[in-house]
Length: 264
Image 1: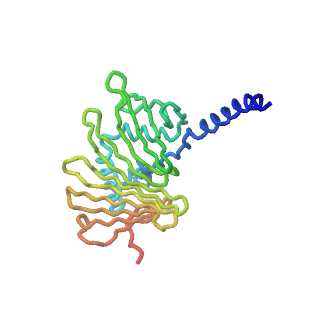
Image 2: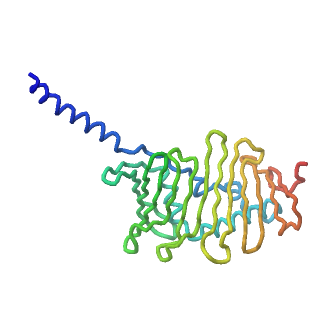
Image 3: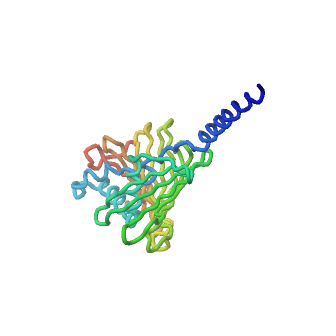
């Protein structure tokens, strides 16, 4: 009788053991880093572009944000687009590599069509992200961006590389996104040697502040720092730049984007 029970129980024990192992080997799917970690929203400065000639303080802020963000992203349209589109894609778990994988195609205007493989390697509460990008007939699985975050995706970093032809770091990013406080921050720093080396743009959002969006631009080439704060959706804001205004005061605009005295 004991032998019969043993024969019955052994397969059942093995089945339970295998089931437990299978469940434990699949890492939890991580949250994707927020869009602001790589592509902050500067909508207040882009939507009113036709009014630049009529307003001064807002125009200087808008032009500065536009120019410097263009400098930062001049070679990075492909990886930034790849990441943004990845936010709306579904992932699958690849048991052979223990990776979460997003695979999809993108089209970047004036650049071409690319295949993207974004992977997430989960180790406890830490996640390593790698963005592989391929262009048919040109290059395959070029790591155009990589980074790390925690499992909840409320803090992390990115490194974006210049191009397949010059695979050196172009931008580094330190970011955070706290749902509890509503505070978001992303600091983009130029790592490429040259005129703008170590220049940076810092983007911030604070849902509880009067000026709930902010940008700080540090231009190492011109030895200039530009601070911009604004409110969305009203559009009112302020800008400070000692090099441009020749003083350390804020210069404001109202919700019609016209110059106004700053609140005392």
